[in-house]
Length: 355
Ligand code: NAD
Ligand code: IPM
Ligand code: MN
Image (cartoon, rainbow, N blue to C red; front, side, top):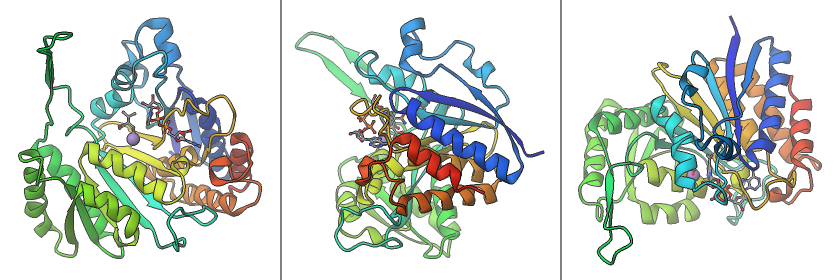
């Protein structure tokens, strides 16, 4: 009935600053396109909550989020007070796993109005998707730490790949590629050095490729792939990668298109059994937090991805149009885009153009 329950989790640092702008856009879109949002703000999954409770989230967080249609998330982490591996494993990474959000979908798109650090590129030249495996791989809690503090200290952290886990993200990526104009999939590997898991990844790509006869595919080792992102970004269409490689590529890609401040992501549970989570690619940016200068576009674009996921395509397109118009306007660009707009001014400019 076009009524959506959304858990709103701003998190830390600039997450708290960009979230109101994401919500401003959502509310403008709801008003213009006639759907209802029940926004439920949560103060957990942030380091202030940890300071008060000694953990990032309440024990009953799942019950509190029960039945939500999606999570709208800012950024988490405040390394001065909580070590990053604790704050992230007890929040974002827990959501991804508990809600089986096995696809992390991240666009890389050169937008009009955004200065490109690569010479001679114009909007349209760079337009591809990174499909990142989001629940296993290099991000694992399998390992051990022996003889800590001694000269015999040993640390081990295993990469975990399952056939189920690899196949399902590869199929998602092939399927996405099959719906695009160029229908090309690039796989990130490192099977020359990482000699067990990565040859397995490559073999699964080859095993699944015949299911998608209309899609061409190739692969690059991650080292040269990063170089190709910089030298030949126009050659990519859909890039599929393991958890860590996808993490790296999805900061590098947006950096090649001007700023990580505009980059959104969708952490998707494609079978719909659990809610999906939408967040900017960037983190809490302690270096600029509290100044009101963070670029809110990554958060707002994440709202676009969320509305697409919820089936509100028209509203999503309207917000996207408002983002594009704001990025080419004189007063809407934040400092990372060599403008002078505040976070709020950029967010208000976008919201005023919706509908
Ligand atoms: P970061 O993305 O927070 O910041 C990297 C650089 O980009 C900084 O110079 C920052 O000022 C700039 N930047 C980031 N977002 C921006 C925006 N919207 N507008 C303008 N400039 C922006 O990465 P980091 O410094 O490695 O991490 C800081 C904290 O955030 C850590 O605790 C880290 O673990 C966490 N983190 C969280 C997420 C998440 O919640 N999804 C993602 C990445 C990092
Ligand atoms: C991201 C972030 C997270 C990740 C961190 C904060 C754990 O960098 O969403 O890209 O590595 O997945
Ligand atoms: Mn990252």
